[in-house]
Length: 183
Image (cartoon, rainbow, N blue to C red):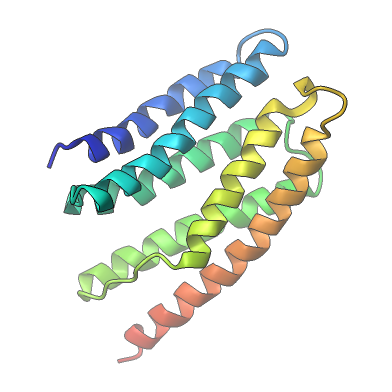
């Protein structure tokens, strides 16, 4: 139950208040500290799955908590960046698309779990999560990035691409779920 892979997953959840707190620091250090914590959280996301597979540490707890940790981390970062105007204008729509899909798919998974139907994470959904984390990393740095790196523009483009993939994968999960609901 409590193995190193699961501890990495739980550490990701524990980093969320630190990321939220970084928004209240003064100056550009806020951006860089938030980015650093978010990056460490992203690395734990890679390693918890890698270690669980490689060293056979997979557990029901890990399979349950890993996607929750991802969703909480992404939701907290999105909400804070919208609140602090690091995500603005039309990019807020992309953030809302991502949040809505995450809640909808979580609800669908819970419903299907009651029916004893497993809905594995698709390969494209894993790429979606990676792209979301990349987008959020650029947006966390934001205006604090060196002038040569247009972090906000890169982050917004990645956020929109992630939102489009989010719509596609959400539709795919919904279609799978509807098949089981109609039985």
